[in-house]
Structure formats: structure tokens, C-alpha cells
Image (cartoon, rainbow over all chains, first blue to last red):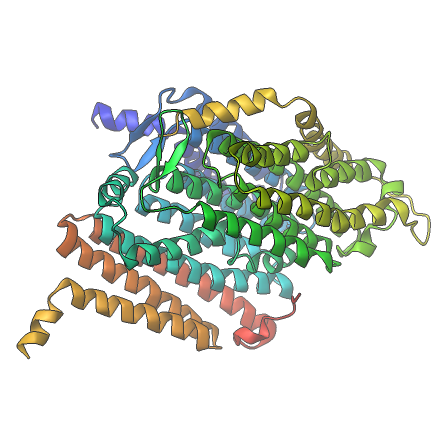
Length: 493
Length: 108
């Protein structure tokens, strides 16, 4: 093994570490059948994620491309590694407190979760079409299995089935788009593709645009942006709640990582001031603005009539993708920093909101608005935490969601154009208040038919408060995270 | 005849086959009600991409990377088919049918 190979493997240490833990769990699963049902696999997952986070801190201070340019290690990769490992650890914690993940399949869940996490972190690091494709499929194929985790439940099976069909077609479109892009640019590596596109000076022909549409189709499916958003409500509703919790944050952020990296390194070039500029002949900003507008309008309007809270949150997560895409329109530093900040805020508040739904679903066996009646009074901690998450999702001042929206809207206003988009965003936030507040109304204003004594277990209370605190704190004191996000972008390769 | 021979050993020939497979795949996915039929449509789309990669690798870049991608596509297609068949089997056990239109308990 040469020194270079060793160095490359060292840079990939967090993923290697997770793979090691994955293999370890496989062996333990075979040797000690008892671990299949107890909390051992959860503890191992959390330990693996913490080890991954520590290794990410330690490894590779300087941004560089390695393994012959297949993957890169820069601030962007690191940011998303922290993000994914944190999400995976929380999801594992959520799942082991839920009755929806049967005791007998706990080990399977941990194995699948770890594997998806490795896939997501490869997606964020990929700087090559093949590696990106492998990462995406690693996440997708395992997600199909995870969506159908409740084996004897018809809804769960249907979710898995729909996810599989739409996901298969979307990834087929994407790989066909990749093949056209490869034929056009003659390379799979992002920098070479960018070099070709820059040299072409806008003479691309129809094939380029076809490839772009197909690739967008695949990536939009992963982040559930318009027009590939329709699977999300069905899949989130059918999948077990802890898994929907994970889906709504992890793979979505991974899709964002892939989309951002591809857009910024292949189709745009860095300018001297540290902003980005679309390559000559590709001006996508209008298209992104329209897509973002449609995504948030569709998400918010479809959420209005829903009564199933999981479905409401699914549509709201589509709307949030719309808000995040707004940050891409200006392609400057402040907008992109705002997207990263929004992702962090979204991670805490959305994990929390889905978690509350999971707790209620365990309690009542259903998750429609009626199931939430009066729960604020019988379980105040749950009610208050849900209030914080919902206010933050709406974008009410003092909470992290507001700061996220403020930064995104502010970056557009600062750049001077697209005021209609900001207006639309604000209007959408107002519309979203209507369906979000229905959940809180059910929890706090409606009295339960009969007084009941319920108690939130410490296990859930600790986790929910743990997510509610950053949601509040980031709404008041956000400078360090913002600076962190800015540093992340400054050394994007 | 000579013309046809030339066409079939040129980049355009391969791309035409790829585009045809891709369109047939989409057609198959859109029209089939049977879940296995939809799965086959997806496989056709993946293979269209693989043909494109191999053709571009031979005629356009002269590098081996496109052919490696084709190998990986086969691998992914196999993995996806394995998972898909398992999901469809599960669906069949519960519903006694693999008609995709039957997957409709969740609607807006």
C-alpha cells in the first residue's frame, strides 16, 4: 500500500469507521442472538455516529480532492458529515423508544440506518458522477426497505411500493441524464466537466438541456422538490413514524448536498469575491426561482385540507424545500450560507415535530388531528415542545425557523431582484400558519372528552427537550452557527 | 446495406438503440399495471443508460471509465431488482395482487 493510498483512506476515516461498526454489528448479530432485541445496536449506532463526528473534526484540515478526484474533503463535506451523523444518532434514539419498530427487528433497523448514513455522507463528498450515483442508490435502495419496515401493515407496504416505483424511475432518469452529460463533456469528474462547459461558451445544443432536465428530475426526487414531490406524503404517512422522521431530514439534506455541490462546481464558477456565477450560456436562476415558488405553493396549499398530522408535516417539509431553494436563486454567499443555516434549524425542528407525532401515534394508535386533543394539558412537556417546533416551522420570531427564513429572504432582497419571490415566500409563511396552528389548537384549546392521566416517559422528554433547546437558542443567538456555515462555504472545492 | 453497416458500428447507432430502450422503458412504466412490468421498464431505462455509457466511452472519450460505470449500473440494477421483488412479494402476501393500481389506500 503506497503512502498516497494510506493518506486517502485516512481522509475517508469517518465513513470507514462507520463501515467498521456496521461489520461489527453484523458479526455480533450472528454470534449473540440476544442483541437482536435489546438496546445494544442502538448504543452501537450512537457510538459509531459520535466516533464519526470526532473523526470528522480530526481528519483533513485542508480541503483537497482524493482518490483521483472521485471524492473531495472540504468544509462542505465536513458540514454534512456532522449533519448526517447527528441525524442518524437522533433517529436511532427515536426509533428505539417507539413501538412502531418491533423489538424483534431492532438490529435490522440499526444495520439499515448505518448503511444509509454511509451512503448519505458519500453523496455529500462525491465529486464524480459515478460516486454520486452509487451514493444515491445506496440511500434509495435501503430507504425502500426501511419504508416497508412494518411488514404486516398494508400502509407501510404500500409506502415502500410507491417509493420503489417512483424512486426507480427517478434514478433511471438521472443515470440516463448522467450518460448524456458524460458523452457531452467527456468526463465524469466535476472539475473536468466544468472546464468543458466553460470552454463551450454556451454552444451546448439540445442534448445538454435534456441531460440537465433528467438529472434535475433525479435530484428533485431526493429533495422532494416540484415536480417530483408527490411521493413524499404517501411515503411519510405509510412508513413507521421514526423512519419518516429520518427520511424527512437525512436523505433530503443529502439530496441538497449533492444538488448544491453539482450546481456550484459544474454549472457555476467561483468569482473573486467568493460568490458564484453561472457558466456562460447556462442561466438557471429564473428556473430555480420558479421551481422554488411552485414547490412552496404546492406544499403549503396541499397541506391545508389534511387531517393526518404526518401528512401535514410531509407537505410542510415540501414547502420548506421551496424556502431553501430560494437561497439558491442569488448564488451569492449570503444565500448559500442561509441554506446551510436553514438546514440546521430544519433538522432540529422537523426531527422534533415528527418525534412528537410518533409519541402520539404510540399512545393512541393513530395520528390524525383528533388524536392530539387535549394532549397539551395532560402532557405539558410534549405540548410545549410541539409548540416550539411548530412556531419555529411557521417562522415566528424568537425561534430558529424565523432566523432561517429571515436570512434567506434577506439575501434575496440584498441582491436587488426577485422581490416577487420574497413576497410569495412571506405569503406562504402566513398560509402555513393556518395548518400548523390547527395542530396546536387541537393540543391546547380542545379539551379531551374524558380527563385522563398520561405521562411522558423520561426517555422521550429528554430527547424532545434536547431538540427544543437548540430550536429556541438558535432563534436568539445564532452568530457562531452562521459563521460556521460561512466557513463551510469559503473552502468549497 | 453498406449504409446500415456503417450506422450500426457508429456512435449514432448505439445512441439510437439507447434512446429507443429509454423510450420503451418509459412507455412500459407508464402503461403497465403489473408491478413486475413496471420493474422491467425501470431495468430497460437503466440498460439504456449503460449502453450510452459504453458507446460514449468507446467513441467519444476512449477511456475505460464509461465502461466501469456500465458495470456499476448492472450491479445497482441487480440490487434494486432484489429489493423490488421482495417488496412486491410482501405486497402480494397482503393484497393477493400485484396490480399497481391497487396500491391506493393512501390518497389525498
